[in-house]
Image (cartoon, rainbow, N blue to C red; front, side, top):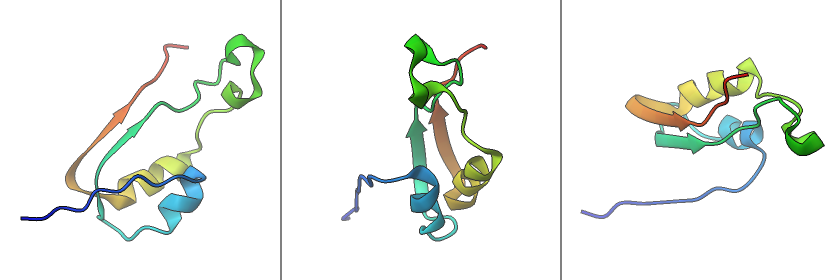
Length: 72
């Protein structure tokens, strides 16, 4: 049995929009927490609801998402 593995680099929302429904086995992410860690701009915003809807759309039934998150 041969399996295909792929790492995709790009803007999350753009990449997700280009993937077919139920096509991803798992998602592993450490998104910004929205706490401006060390005053950095990249950690100012949190991912949008639209992004998470796309994640759910592309995940296969029974797929897993491992999402790191903060308590704030």
